[in-house]
Amino acid sequence: MNLLDIRNLTIELETPQGLITAVERFSLVVQDGEVRGIVGESGSGKSLVGRAIMGLLSSKWRVRADRFFFAGQDLQQMGVDEHRRFMGQEAAMIFQQPSSYLDPIAKIGEQLIEALPEQRSFSLSFWRRSRERVEKVSALLHKVGIRDHTRIMNSYPHELSEGLCQKIMIAMAIANEPRLLIADEPTSTMEATTKIQIYKLMAKMNQLRKLSVVHISNELETAANWTDRVTIMYCGQAVEAGPTEQVVNQPLHPYTHALATLVKRDPERQMLNVMPGTMPTLQHLPTGCRLGPRCPRAHKDCIEMPRSRYLRNRSYRCHAPFNLEEKHANAAASGQTH
Ligand SMILES: Nc1ncnc2c1ncn2[C@@H]1O[C@H](COP(=O)(O)OP(=O)(O)OP(=O)(O)O)[C@@H](O)[C@H]1O
Image (cartoon, rainbow, N blue to C red):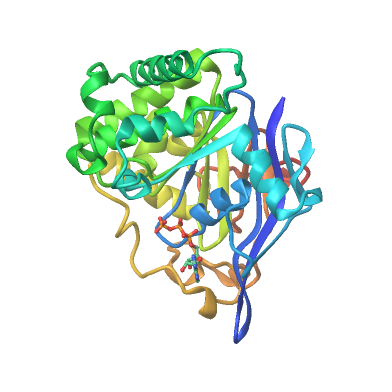
């Protein structure tokens, strides 16, 4: 079943100079129980997509789509508050620098109790309800691999490492038993071993609880290890999507190809210098393909914006893809969304 079904999502920002399109005709389908990656360099629009799904964008943003469904519900038919409330029950989002999302002057235990769903057992005494809540919080901490419950519950966020704070954010996120977790670069400030712990934890949640996960990352390496399918974003557009293993090993789009080459050459390296040049700003987009000025395969056709093309279980947006025989390139046609 399609848990998330987004077709041609466009996100625009109102500015004194007019509307700026930050995300353009972005499509994404996430199946129930799937782990999906969205990978792209800083500023490519990944977080905007995550926030638009959750209904967290402020009124200066305009969001429209041909289809914007979650669990069969049309998010575009909901008002802003309803969208936010609905997604708050069905999904959760975690961010980088978790400590900045925790209240610095409240103990972790209090914050976790706050995150528990509304208690309805009013027949129980106050003390019994309190005890039950502490037990639920202990169980949540246990689920995210934290054993020293009493110490952690009595700590303030600044007394804990970023890795522990992120585990606590995940505990808060799953308190409501969401169907989807959007993890927006959840480990970008962490050291390698902590990163692996957090990704293993999300993988466990996916396997044990069928929690669907959207991993937002600027490293293809992360997606390669932890996702089933991946969408690559460049400058507000999805440029390639498909099963992660195929995208990493047989990239079609030149941008993905550069990312994949970098990962194979030096897995530890970030994607800052993935190819010569920089991503254009939204105010100064090139004519035609947005990668054009940086692309080693650019040719005369690229002054026209390539449309999304679909081939079996993959999609790409390029006039000169890698790893594709001419007959397949000609056969690629529109009609599906990945
Ligand atoms: N509040 C804002 N006001 C103006 N422009 C914004 C705002 N938030 C995002 N943008 C612009 O929208 C584009 C996409 O931003 P977004 O944060 O989604 O990128 P990202 O891929 O998530 O980057 P990062 O990995 O750095 O978080 C960028 O060009 C960014 O400058």
